[in-house]
Image (cartoon, rainbow, N blue to C red; front, side, top):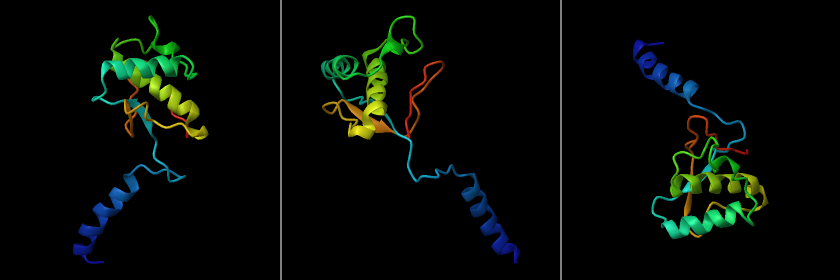
Length: 118
């Protein structure tokens, strides 16, 4: 094989081999608060998801791993994702009256783990 082809094909081959691959063809998605959402929208959505919505919001309570940063946006992100992951296979969406968006970047940090359900 000519050195020219080798110089072109080797980087392409390395790129293909190092790209993360999903066997089922799906991308991982988490649901987080939209930065454009108002505090009132975020609070209303948290009240629903952590109340009658049935999400497990225990990790955003005081002295729990996701309490800090103690902001409405961060607590909403955790609550939205907890609800979305629990109910997405039953038709739930990541919308919350336009207060949330999906992301393919895992929002987990430190000891705060955001669940992901394939």
